Image (cartoon, rainbow, N blue to C red; front, side, top):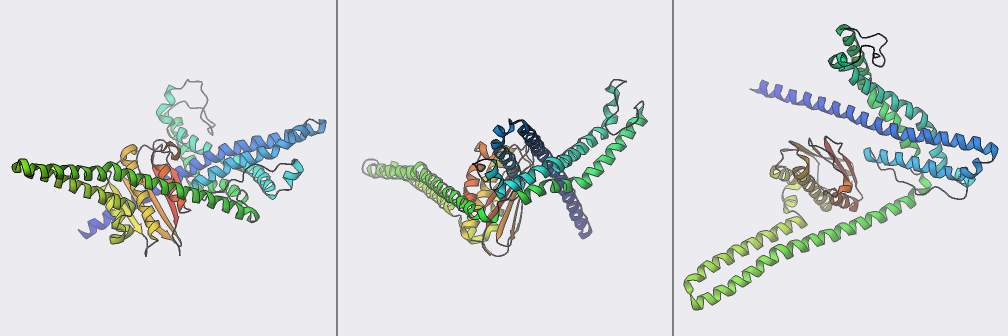
Length: 423
């Protein structure tokens, strides 16, 4: 029996390892496609700079030169947004410096952006094209034996194949080329994606001399988000009390008055009225307890974060696996935020994802609490759609945390949360 249990655990571990590898490959392909888009923009911007420089020889380029810093900043901000979606946030720096081309070139940020533009518009474009081409052609060539017969006889062979396909043996030779391309992408794809993103991660981050002012602006926005989240929570509590417990208590008062009159007129009916009043009072008490749990769940104090997340998973309609490794206790507000984020995410999974399974993973690394909620649903979640993710982002921003949502159409959906929790 122990041997059978051990083999089952080994199979689960191998399956999880395979799924993790598949996810890494899919993420690499997604990042290469996104990087290819910004690399094309960078390449076009480089061509525009060259054309404006050539036009300066006849005087026309001097009219267009002042707009070059805005073009460079616009393309660089696209890359900042792309990198922020899959890693640490890179703060945008606002409009490009005004005052002409010479003043812009005197700005260290603009010079760094020009260096990034040159690297990403050449090396980044090559890596994106090579990675995407290898992935797509591997799929095409691997499936070629299944559909090559429907092609016209004089149709050219697939890319990277130098022979003419005339029979099944030739088609299976194409499939072997697909295997070779797939191995190349599986081996080099993640590294190519990291190399493509590296110049942006190094050159597009704010320099130290302006990081303080940006940090002040970021904290101002964080404070505004905290105030908004606080106001939203107060409105929720007020609405819950007004629409629920208050109405129940009014009903109790009315029923008690009716029972008093019944005692004087028809004592036999008073007992039924008192039963209704007791039921209304119990309902009011239950709703008050729900409001209290919504303010600060007692389960966090009683069972800690791990027990609270286990309770949410057990109550979820979608089967949910919980993996918590958080030694010690975080701040009460941080644990409450992690609890509410998980609760809202699981609610969204039940309502929108059509998922069959979900996973909640919580880890503490240094002074950060890392939370990941995944599901195998249909994907397509967007923070801008207001499907509960907006409220999650407000709560996290109030703690100066970070939220990353990865939800391609067709799934899976992954919500990654990073919260500071002290040392």
